[in-house]
Image (tube, rainbow, N blue to C red; front, side):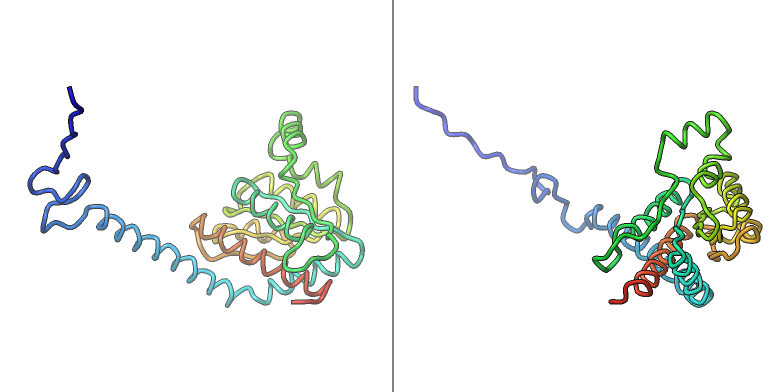
Length: 226
């Protein structure tokens, strides 16, 4: 008995192909994609509009923050960074840009994020409480003349507030990063970038943009170049 020739299946009448659409109808995926694209565009525009406000209000303060860090580095000081959640990521991001490189291949700068050692964070949280996970580390690592970059989008994080309190008592210059609700926290800092928004993701985007600007200015001041 010979081999049978397989018959080719044809799509059902009225359908162009498997997964296709009936004539005269818009693809549902394309409509959804268009709607999602509009949402994405508006989200990105929200971010850019907020960055424009921050640029208008805080360019001078950003430059001053960089000058404070450069002055500290020249006196053998260091930069300490802290924050929670997304702000922890911002803290270690800025520390990495300074301690590794930003634009230039150059020697490392002394910068550390105290959010990144889980043994220290969990031991302090367990023995003293989570409110002290940063302040206890600053007690051990900080020195007069250092600079603390303290990130809190709400301005209400007790551990970041305590970090700022302890740092100021030790003679560490405190640069805060917060949002529109963080005016109380801002008053605890020596200077503060207070982003005019209550939208947490937009605030964090502005914080890292300012952080990048500070890293650029510090690197340029210390090493020259770009």
